[in-house]
Each structure stands twice: as structure tokens, then as C-alpha cells.
Length: 167
Image 1 (cartoon, rainbow, N blue to C red):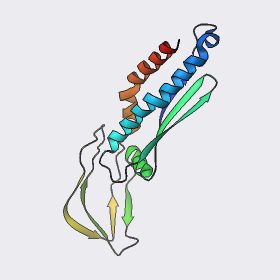
Image 2: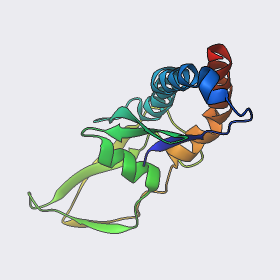
Image 3: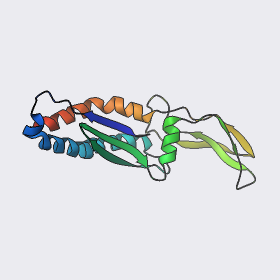
Image 4: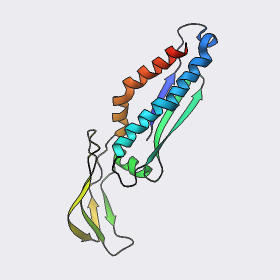
């Protein structure tokens, strides 16, 4: 589940492309792949601080006629964990496969629904042994939705400044 920033060109002046189009386009591309991508990646990293096997993050810029699209997404070994925590999982049964029993403690996650993140996670209580358990699932954290809500204003201001600077 990536964060997507999509920019569609709207040109109020007839010859804006002819006048400064290449400079503006280069400025917007550099801003998207530089400061904007780093800021979104950092917002994603904040939500995974302290995770065992936290994902890495990567960004990808695609350009088409009058449209630029920046995707910032989880990658690496922790990608699946990000997707499960951010998107949630349904209730399911976990059964021991490589050992006769599951061995576990109670767990307090470092994130919670409602944009709660960055706290330390912990395991506590006695160890429990079971052949299988009914997992209640993960309530979605909707990381991407919260990041977009928090960063949208800054992204718009930053891109406007890049366009003005390039004119």
C-alpha cells in the first residue's frame, strides 16, 4: 500500500510550456524525488520505529503527458508486516507447524488504530504453550491515510514553491 502523490498539469497561460516548461517540470520532478519523497519516507519510518524487521521504503516517479506520479512504498523483508499492520488482517487460526506447540507471551504492539505509533512494544506475562490459537486479527492502522492527511498541506506548499522558483 503505497502513498501516491499525483500531479496533473493545469496550465493557465497559453504558452507556459514554451516559456518555462522544462525548468518547471525539472524543478517539480527534483522536488518530488528529493524533499517530498524523503519526507514521506520519514513519516513511514516513524510509524515503524522499534519494529523487529521494519521495512525499508522506496519511491518511484513516473511521468506521462501532463501527469507526474510519485509512489512511496514499503519494501524489503518488513513489507508484508507493514501491509498487515496498516491494512489489518481478519481473525484467523494459527497452528503449530514446525514444532509440537506454539510458545508465546502476551504482546502489546507499538502501534494502535487512530494514528498511535512510536511507543515501545512489549511482551509480558508467563509463556503459554498451545497447539493452535484463534488470533483476533489486526485492526487496520491506515498508516497511508494518516500520512496523507498530515503531509498534504506541506507537499502542496513545497511543490508550489518549486514551480515559483523555476519560473
